[in-house]
Length: 72
Image (cartoon, rainbow, N blue to C red; front, side, top):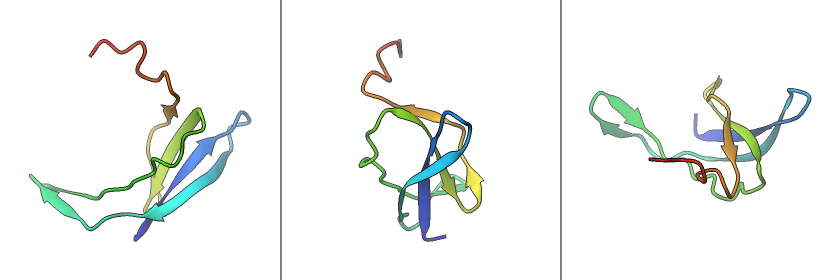
């Protein structure tokens, strides 16, 4: 697919599409192919997933303090 979407996880467990954008051309590394997807315009704090080709990522947070408690 030429596009991917960022979906916000709502309090009731549903998802809302907040961003859809183009993905870059495939880049091979090792035995995998990767594509760039810039969704940096999504800045509202919350929990999100990326949907691409009918597959969703695990939920991840977007928040100013997301790395505050990281030790690495």
